[in-house]
Length: 270
Image (cartoon, rainbow, N blue to C red; front, side, top):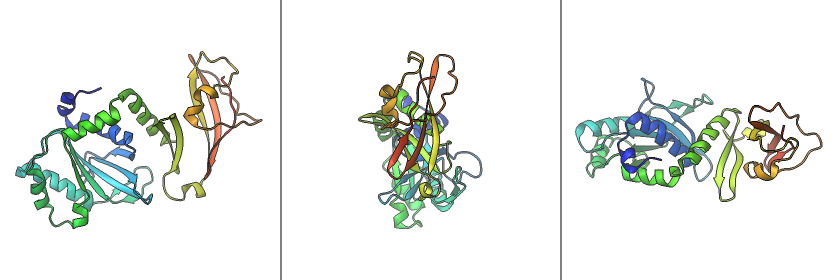
């Protein structure tokens, strides 16, 4: 876990990789990817998206800085240029290849944003429409620290969930399984990667879960691990259990999903 002083002292690359990306994932943003480096960056250090109040995709560009943002001509011009590029240039979704446009821009620094910074930046980007200007959000080091404490204070757990979700995202091009921490424990759900994906490509996949080797062979660990996957149902034709690796067992569940939720067959410890 970082201290506030350590957060404020981070350089841009570790700030982006070790704080901003895990933080955005923990806050529920989707497809959080580093977009930094090279001529194709076009102002965006990170791209991601979140569903709006109607359930539609809203793309976010993050301009990340590890320096104070002030009204000085150099930094103000730099930030303003990245904001204009973020809104003005589309980007390719790395997973679907679809062309995407930014709806909101977050300017985030782990240091101070002075009072004269926003007016100086706004004067440079004044040619943008009011609706675009209203969708620029500034987050300074103090607010970033508040986010960090709220979402990443239990860093090992949140970081592990973020890593799990990143791996789950590669399973299927149409759906995204997600591990979430709720008041009832860890739950696995799935969401469409684009509207109508479930109708076009219903899910039928297999989950393999490594469980402790302390579980006896042939026992059903669903009582212990069931909360991870939600409601369990039985089947007379359970999937064949694969060989057990060293120090752990493999617990397999076949599942399908429709609009009503998850449906599982039974399984046992190998």
